Length: 352
Image (cartoon, rainbow, N blue to C red):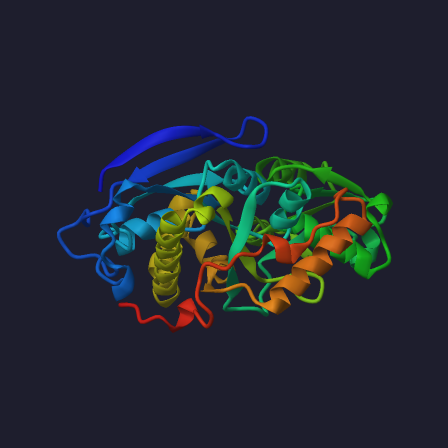
């Protein structure tokens, strides 16, 4: 496949996003890629979609771009796709609202903070963890820390990416022991800056997801609070641009994009070695570190259900109560399912 690298200016500050255009229509190798012809028959031929180029938000290097090359899942698509890299969720949601991207996956908090700012986007699907007893994010403390429980965070400095799922974890962890954000010092840092602050002892704890959490633990850090129910969700959410959703023809094509993405991830779950290699390459981390965090990326894609809406509403209300947002969010109003009822990517038949 041909590639063209461009630069996009992110929606928050001066964040730059690497974007690669994939000209679909054939595999880059002599051997047919495993998903190069694996699409739903009803979506196979749509010449009217040929005018579209869809930008997929790649949140933190989730493997989607590399897996697209490996599986060939977009090879025979009648449209083009490109990928824009984001380091965490809030800028991705803002990019969806501005139309800079068409689709992307984020944690549970960015849709809430985005809605509170009245961004124009919708939540269109859910990424449900296939390992719901394993935390995708944690609050970690450095090696040798004397902190033992969430209650010990009182008066401490906690690094957290603002408006991210890790922000929600920190908020709920504090609430679970009777603390509020006023009882601690939340230091809002993006993941790279958070890693530096954590590794140099400038903060007492770090609320962060994998692979950063897994790598830190491997290097001696300790998990203080696991990101598991009831204080944290193990699901993430796909968001899409209102502009794309309001156009009937473009919406149908975007649904096909989402189905193909869910298919490549279904293939990846059944091919963990290749999945780990894709994560390693995208994130620029050792293969062993990618394997250690693999469970965090093993998901199944489904429509948004009522329990998801209720969990998001509870989280939105908690953010408002804690003063982390200033406008009440009505979660049902930002949900617009793209996938048909009963759709579950874990039930798709994919070639190993």
